[in-house]
Length: 73
Image (cartoon, rainbow, N blue to C red):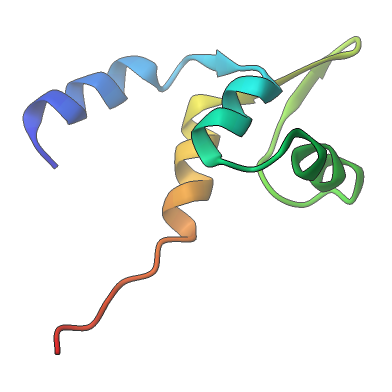
């Protein structure tokens, strides 16, 4: 990971995203994110009233945990 990406990531860790932003970043549909919340799986989230927000750090962690490492052939 180069220095610029590390700095950007560090500055973004405290940012909160709505479900549309998370859908765009992860390429998961809104209905999939909503189903994950209903079944209490997927990316952790916070609710204030009816507003749903995802921590940038949680979204990054979720994506990294599903990374498939390739073996060198």
